[in-house]
Length: 396
Image (cartoon, rainbow, N blue to C red):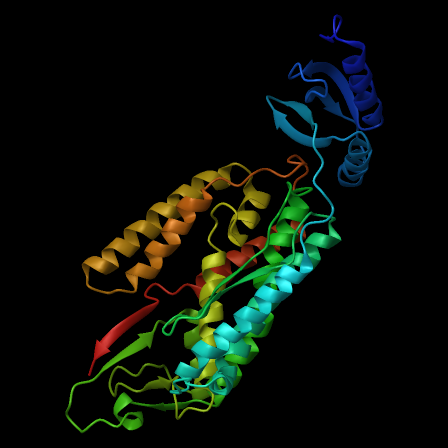
């Protein structure tokens, strides 16, 4: 039944235009105008016509865009609902010079911080170039991650921006708070959501793992006493990075033993005089960042993948994950392990972005079998990258 008998001519005109755009895609059983605005949102209810749902929906997106609308397809109570929203995401997403400027500032920031990793205090501008092993390694991983998102997003005509890198030139930091890409409109489909979400971690890992192997191969193994100018028997405090299964395996492949060695206290030394220490450490950081991004929460990469695979069930998974993150972080702090602060920071980020992932425009067409299989592979990758205790301070 159509409820627009007494609607203004202009409203009837736009509804008829939208109805015509849905031809060969949907058998319309009911139409509901959702506001009294001159250009109102409209909801169509009915059944989809058998065909290639994905390509047909792409055509609907183009037809609606010409009318100044965006379609949102969902399923409720056995019926399909298509809402026509009177807005179209802009094709131009940013001013590239801003992205390039921030990239340059982040490079300088990471070089500055990287110099400290080489035990160089940069008193002159030229001194920051000592930090290139750390800076270029981590920047390469982050750039590969973000550009993988960007190029896959553009392939789907998704309104994604170039990455915005965030400099943080503070000693003791990473020289950056990472990078973000703005999505100025919903993603097209679950397929697009999955592909864009999974592209970043895969792109980052393709760069991070070879650099990790290279850094470890150029790094030395020993106790802190072997590398630090400390009198025998004097207590020293060192920070030890945490092990993931992948990091543990990489050290075993390169050095032929499980490290750290609990019997001798030996481990890979990621500071001078290890030639590859800064490279290995930056790669370890890149893997840690990838792991955090794979949490199935909100707009994180793992959140994209989880919603694409499981729809609204992913919201419950996100809430469970956030509870676990906060619980584990607090437990570590109660045990006086300040690596728990890292978990609490991720918990705060999860609360800030929210556990719920927004649905794509086409929230109906499911993923194909190959993408579902890849999604489960990424779940395994997450557990391979998981670092329960990111870092700890030990006294020897």
